[in-house]
Structures are given as structure tokens and as C-alpha cells.
Image (cartoon, rainbow, N blue to C red; front, top):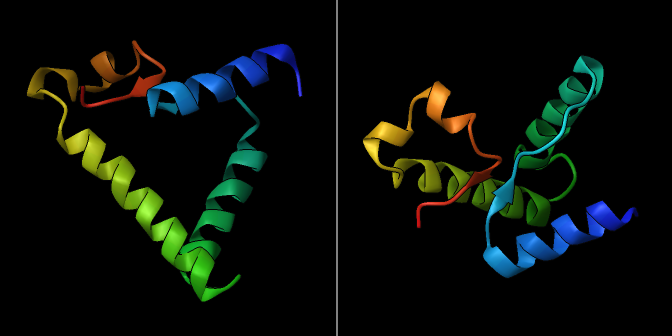
Length: 85
């Protein structure tokens, strides 16, 4: 793990925010989406399904707590974190 990755991991723990920085290929993104779908459907295990559904619900809940003015795509893309604080 690179120093930058370690710093970002620490920031996630320290701030409780979800980081959305970086980019990856379309193929990898599609595979990640399929993995998340499989996990939430319980294809790995019921425990993973519960964890995955809870994480998705938490992310959506954070979005609903944003001020109305910050919910537009133009505003959301200005920052790489989601936080309702």
C-alpha cells in the first residue's frame, strides 16, 4: 500500500467520511458493481449481505442529509467526500 493510500485510509477512519477520489477502467467499475450486487443478494453469505445493505443504506442516508443546494451533480463533484456535517 502506498503512503498516499495509507493516509487516505487514516483519513477515512479519522473523519468517518466516504472517499470518492481516483479513477479506474470501465471494466473494473462494472466488476465492482457486479460484486456489490452479488454481495447484497447474499451470494457470498447472509452476513456479507447484511453488511453490504447496511453500507449502501448509510451512504444513501448521508446523501439525503445534504443541503438541497449541495445535491446537484455540479456541487457533488467538487468534493471527493460525502458528509452531512
